[in-house]
Amino acid sequence: LGCLMGALGFFTLWRRDKALWTMLLLVLLGHTVFFIRTWWDTAWGFIPSFVIFALWIGYGIHACLQLLNTLYHRHHIRLPRVAVYTVLWGGLAITLLQTYVRHSPIANQASNYATELYGKQLLEQLPPEAILFCEYAWFPLLYLQHVERQRPDLSSILQGEVLFPDYYTLISEKRFPNIQHVKSDKPTVISTADYFWLLARLNAKDHPLFWDPAPRHQRDLSTHLLPQGLLFAFDPYAPVALTPEVWRQHWKLVARSTNRILQGGLEDSATFFLAHKLNQVASYLRQIGAMR
Image (cartoon, rainbow, N blue to C red; front, side, top):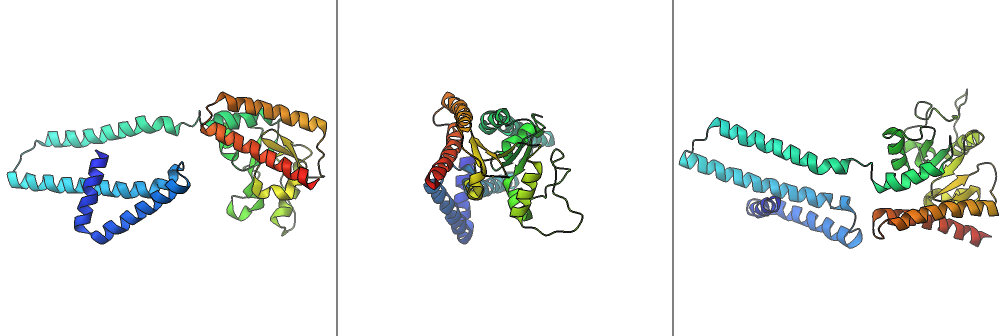
């Protein structure tokens, strides 16, 4: 029905306003062609095309209502008020119920691969009272902590919050009551990099520090990172040494992650994402090997 209404609206708009019809058609085709060619599996890229088709559906419904209005006045059709309200409110109720039934399972992200597989693996790996400077991991960990109430002892800080504080809510005791904060009796101006190192060193004694594999900010920290499965352990005081014990612990965690990857489908999102994270850790190790 939606496609039929969209097709009707497409031709109705072409007859009424060719300039607007041309503009909408070019925008729809431009977005669709670009995202099919570049990111065919990225659903949000097709939102403009979806909105334009929804407008065509609206024009199609408007054309049908105009036709019904013309027929009603031409033939003096008498409809009981009860029937009219029954159709209107019944249609609204059916639409809302259908929307709930279709979207409720999607809105519930408890079984999403990011939380069920990746997020819970991180919770198992992170020791008590740990601080994770994270990027993508922030989303599943935030859900697991605040919705499912798992591991409230952990502090998940977005890397951008300390490296680009102008664009994020400032770190405060209200948001992160479990960690120590950089304080000064006098107003002090420091760079974001200095603030990050001060915060890390202030908490290093009481909190194990970890870094989410993110290539953008990894270069400045490369000598302070120790690979541990899907994450890096982080020592802000001195360059770390890749000892045999470090390798054993890392490969133990990698083996566990790889085993979980192989249990899923080879083409699903979980397999792709976890493999990507392991590839980032491997890329870091290749860089360290080249430096040495």
